[in-house]
Amino acid sequence: MESFVVSARKYRPLGFDEVVGQEHITTTLKNAIDNNKLAQALLFCGPRGVGKTTCARIVARMINGFEEKAEVNSLNIFELDAASNNSVEDIRNLIDQVRYPPQFGRFKVYIIDEVHMLSNAAFNAFLKTLEEPPSYAIFILATTEKHKVIPTILSRCQIFDFNRIQVSDITKQLQKIAKREGIVAEEEALHLIAQKADGALRDGLSIFDLMVTFSTGEKVTFKDVLNNLHILDYDYYFKIVDGLLAENPTQPLLLLDEILRKGFDGHNFIVGLSEHLRNLLVSQDTRTIQLMDVPDSIKKQYAAQAQASPPSLLLSWLNIANQCDIHYKGSKNQRLSVELALMKMANVNAVFKSNGTALAQEAVKKKLN
Ligand SMILES: Nc1ncnc2c1ncn2[C@@H]1O[C@H](COP(=O)(O)OP(=O)(O)OP(=O)(O)O)[C@@H](O)[C@H]1O
Ligand SMILES: [Mg+2]
Image (tube, rainbow, N blue to C red; front, side, top):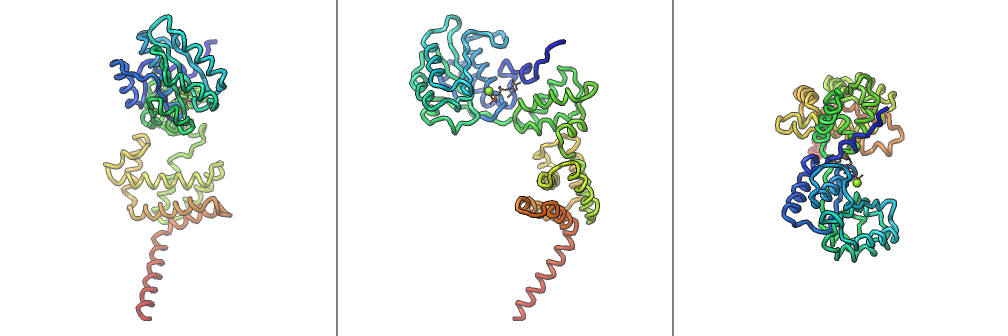
């Protein structure tokens, strides 16, 4: 049997041009290297799985002029995982190594991953080396938690802040990889995976691998991904809004029941409904449609429903959903609070009318007094 390499490793970029969604960083680094202006201490910060270790390795390879793009190709790159090697001893070992100039290439590059995990003593032992490194040494520190890195280290490093990766960029990357692997995948399915990845490309790739394993016949479909990731189908929200537009709570209440019976959480449902209403609001204008993070086919569906939904009504619904969201945790009967919200939405016109009359009556009363 062929051994399986997870996509996150198989598709680790080997050059800056392959790094997705971090152009501000890759351009700066490339220019600095081309002009021989690279600082000796760099700090890569940002969320997990967005390319920090990847870029550190690319820098290491580039400054030594190793053109061939082979993975781990040099004695000049030293990686220390500070999460598991966080003692003073570990840092002392590292400092000892730094003393010797490289035998090949021009630079020795030390990548210290998860640097926020170093103990205080280790941090302090490291400070002096970081401040005055030998000319051939470059330190690249990486961390997901910049606030845990002591200021004395921060001030000695050139800092690069990595972005979360946009849903559209993750989708594109997944499309590329699916194509190379000969896997047929629906665009909506990849989009859903990208949304679930929550900004981390590595997570996107891992979920993708999982979905490929689950899928039958080398095809990743929207329906399969929904089921396997336990995500609520957009369709539910479209149907619920249809019911609300008809000022009839029956269908929405029955759908809510179905959703809850499938094991979805009421709070997530109401938050999802708010998101849906927000999407309908931004779909009112062709210029704001792009603010929506959904596949193109679904954008069309939004545009159609938005046409049927007056913005003032959407705003009232959004208000009701928001109130439900805020009070959900404190509610004794959470199911009822969601049901009540749906009923209010279906009857919003009637509710406003009666409120309006009450207000008018109050005003008349005040005038009479
Ligand atoms: N910006 C990106 N462009 C292309 N691929 C990426 C990018 N970010 C992450 N990946 C993919 O995810 C894998 C893991 O990325 P990497 O190890 O660089 O993440 P990291 O930022 O160091 O994460 P962590 O904080 O968890 O260490 C890579 O091998 C690559 O397949
Ligand atoms: Mg890393």
